Length: 413
Image 1 (tube, rainbow, N blue to C red):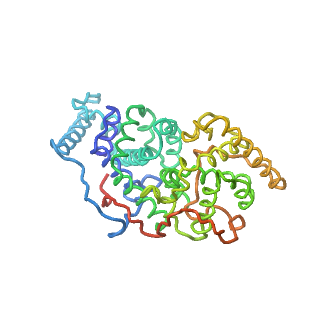
Image 2: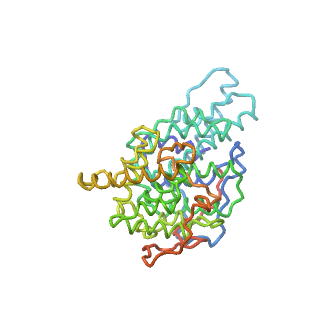
Image 3: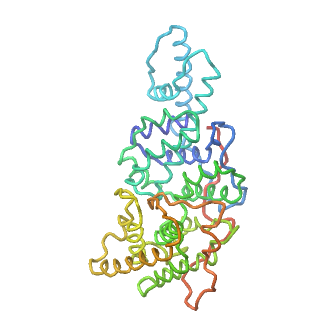
């Protein structure tokens, strides 16, 4: 409660510090299970020796900050008793106590209800923290557009606590500052992704829990910077076009190296019952799957984005795949050539899916993967061995990524 309330106060003050980053991580790894039992955590701590420990991070306690919050909480409890006795509201004298009082919204006389409100407040704080961590990957503009959807999704996970999020306003200034701070502290981001990858692969999650984790982190941090690969999967899944046909049509001198890299991932990584650590490998080291980095395969990404837009029913600006930053400044002459390639691809897809029912696509920024199943059906996987042209792809380990990370265990929220 104290850490969560402090987080909210710093958001309101547009304040970003290193101490705030560790508050966010503490809350994120303490996510309660959907339903609201704060003593039952969604995430299991990775075992000792998992990853590479670089430091034991602690929240800064300089200037007696913990004492300040403890005093504020004591002040809050005293005010609640005074309210019950006098049956009127007394204004808090401490700014921190004001935040606590506002978010607890305690009505005196019902200790069980008070505790429940505290628990649900903790759920909201933890969920918000996990959502904030996507700024390590997303632009401030994209992140701010996602807030309303996040608030709606929260209500499907927890029965209460959404009142804390309803009036939450995050400024572009705060989002930009937090993104910059996360970029400077990759160990913290690595730690969060390590927890996510470990629980996706080794945890015992039901569908509801895995869906929640996938929304908060899985679909955010998987395939980082691999827009071409993501769009290929999106098009194939939505149209049911044969994967070999799709990749064959995409292959040309401008795109050959990237297409070979996609084939390599499909043959060697996206296998049935394969652990999914590789999907997060570029978070830990951008040299993984380097040929599929968006800036290295811009012609392929443009063709896929153009194709996706042509066959998609979504028309919103936010979902326009042609707004991907790396392909905005391609030359007009090159775009004309790639537009013709896209038109041919759309025609090929139409012919190959003529016997299928119509499929409607989702906006690319809603790209999802299934944590516990292969990326697509076995019938659509490439069956033939690789050609002599081998993609320049570094192979990640299937287990136990060796990212530098911060050792953490569940704190009390």
